Length: 184
Image (cartoon, rainbow, N blue to C red; front, side, top):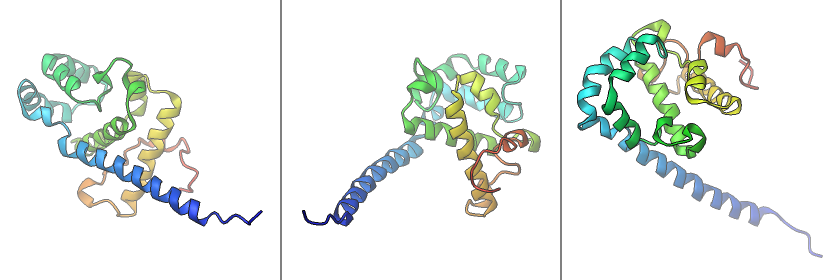
């Protein structure tokens, strides 16, 4: 039997992996280009014009925040119906999302956190989000690890200053969980 050389198979496999990674990137680029497009049109625009400035200064999950979401009524319901990166988009929530829905959702959380007005209020509250959206412990850990890596990239100045957090995306408590195997 002739000695096997894996090089041809590895290179062929790498090419196929690259094809699918590029396909996923194209899906994400499309999603980035149309993110929240529905907010720019009725029935959402009027509601978001009124409530976005209010939500920016509220604490995520607070009674005041919850009341504001309820007052947004049909405009917010329409937004959830039109945008699959929201757990409310489908029955089964996060457990029924595709990976690009999850990636867009996390990017949405990061963008929202980075525009919060209060320095003490601009981290992503994974405790609240886990309860609100019934996020499994495993997915929570994956999200936390992703946010931790994003924080580390910000510290290394790979992320433009206008997108960096004043605080980290993760709360100090979350950072104490010892999230990454990478040395802090």
